[in-house]
Image 1 (cartoon, rainbow, N blue to C red):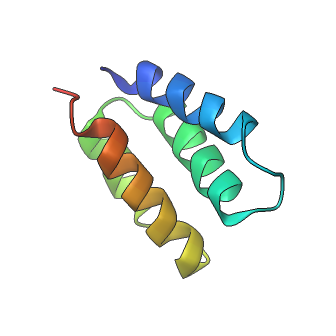
Image 2 (cartoon, rainbow, N blue to C red):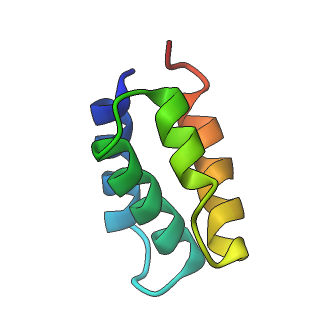
Length: 71
């Protein structure tokens, strides 16, 4: 899975969650970050800058799950 695949998967997850929810914010953050970075390492670094902390933690957890199979 590359960054664009991760972005697509995260966007699909965001579309299935209620707007305004923590899950929606996290999935949207992962989708945007993966769509705008070159690789997994760059995406991970960018996610470290998300605020507030609750969204950052949820986004990093989701990113970890999604990228576990990414090379």
